[in-house]
View 1 (cartoon, each protein chain N blue to C red):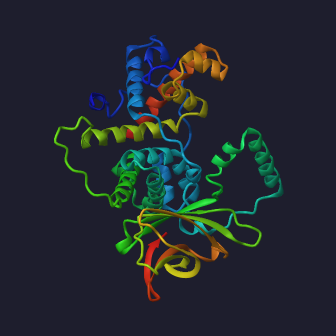
View 2 (view 1 turned 90 degrees about the vertical axis):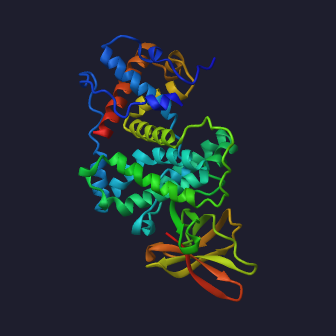
View 3 (view 1 turned 60 degrees about the horizontal axis):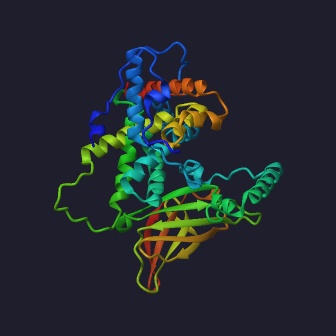
Length: 202
Length: 201
């Protein structure tokens, strides 16, 4: 898949637009992980809200089965609770550490499958190879996490625009706001997403 | 008319602005398209798993106002259709919290989740146990779910058998959960012999 190969691991930096306020004053992933490591249940819940959909998305990609994927989500967060004390911010961003924990928990669940190994196909597969799949998973992880950092109305706009199958005019009608406002807010939401994605790889 | 899956960035944000900013928006647009939609969480995942001793801390009883609200919500749900109402309740089982279990030893590939419903006035905690990948026992054998302390089975919450694939069974815990610190599963083999723990929280 050509698209995956072109995907940037980091977005080009741009000066923060004066009209766009900071994403939020919420604690960073790194702070939350350190608090979870100290047994802070509230921090654990906040981390769950931020990452549950990203973990489920990753699990569904890897396992395919909804039931197993949901188990993997539970196991991932149980594992985060147990091992957060071992997280060291100086070794890398929290998003990447969480991704590694999730990947391991999901792999464990995948190994639990008792299906016989598939036979190697005679023809070269047109599906993405392991490297591409890993890259796609990482991209999805980052984007899904970043979506959680948007305000509710911004996230809804992005989801309607990209996955709701609606035109901007239809979104304006649905939400009862002018078309110009939909475009302005969508642009602001995209800029905020770019900012959140940059934040993850700092 | 439905739009194509990949929205046009120009339609979304127009083409005014500094080239650097437009390029930044284009890149984030590509990332969103590549990522695809995030999945919706099922009711079972609406709350984080209960971890450590938190899993056994009793929730405060529902207050009368909350009960009234629940009744009102039920009436509303009826107005919008029984089917929707039943769908939202996950097959009729309302989950208060969920606890994950993992297999140990030879049962390491197995996993399970215990969905714990709301305790009734008599102190019964309804449980919906979903077990995956736990090998069926020989004829005459069964598994048993126990509340545990420090990994040791203490009181039984019921017995079940498995198919080796997915088994879902309703059980009950008529105990004070806060007096325990986990759940375990043991196997009873034909002839009355009980194995060690095969699954734990």
